[in-house]
Image (cartoon, rainbow, N blue to C red; front, top):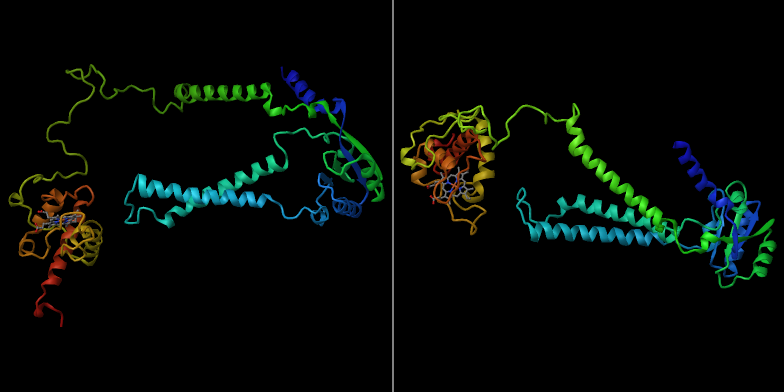
Length: 400
Ligand code: HEC
């Protein structure tokens, strides 16, 4: 089997060598011995107005581009254009998604913010530039998907890929006639002039990647890979230790039947009065603040507690209540204006009352129990007390 495959590969490999050439001329090739000769020859050929020619050397030669009159490579324009398309489409995409389709406040930034869009914009720019450059080179300059140049496997190619320098003027050049080109070559010092004929397969329009066999092989490979991956990942892996992710264990799925409990249900409600680990139930949930019997703030006042309170207050309370609790926050006009926290009502409240409002909410103000931890709530209260004191300080309370 393997031997058969190897033979098949070898067959592919040598196919080109043995394929007979047609009568149709592709171009005239000339060989030179030194780099200087080929650069001069290229300059003469370009000077005579030939356009459909190319030079083949074993290594890049300095000055060849100028001699051939190539000018600036055009691939740069292609790369630049696609890079620009990448930049614009990324900005438009993010602008539309974040600004119009799904506007979301993230960290208080504007819906569409340039700084946070830079990474994606940069990446799309680089991606499109890269793809355009590679595909552009292959398709526009190397004439992909046509792979079979008539020059492949010629005597000429063997020479220029080892130690000679060659030039080929193609027959599709308007100025091409066999005699003039031959004389031109000889006058520039060529030591050999060769005729390059098309192969039969060069003349058929079919390129290898459009052949049914090739397309069939690609589709076949894709289907087989997809099917094998699907079964491996979804079925086979689950049966093999240690990849089964504990899939195969004795357990009861939620919503399923079980004989363990008398009511045959796989799921059981928690026993009445169960308290989740690390969770302290709030006894006054949903009750009016007059019933709240929490009196003392369990946190002692300290600089770090006040700073923590200020930090949390500025994040969670200041949008509505303002930085100083005066009810002039940034949500002005978007949410009902809260009353000042310096009223006689709030200043004479116990800490437990304020805790109740944060934990339970009050009328339109929602509960902040989910966002602010218990200790942080008490720290915020210390900070509110400090704000209140600063607003209503009496002369004698000020430090000397
Ligand atoms: C979304 C806006 C909003 C946010 C954020 C907010 N509040 Fe309120 N708050 C209100 C509104 C509106 C009221 C008035 C509710 C009412 O009608 O009784 C209020 C009332 C209060 C009261 C009672 C005042 C009174 O005189 O009855 C206290 C205390 C209070 N908030 C503290 C806080 C604290 C502390 C925070 C931060 C954890 C906070 N609020 C976050 C909107 C907000």
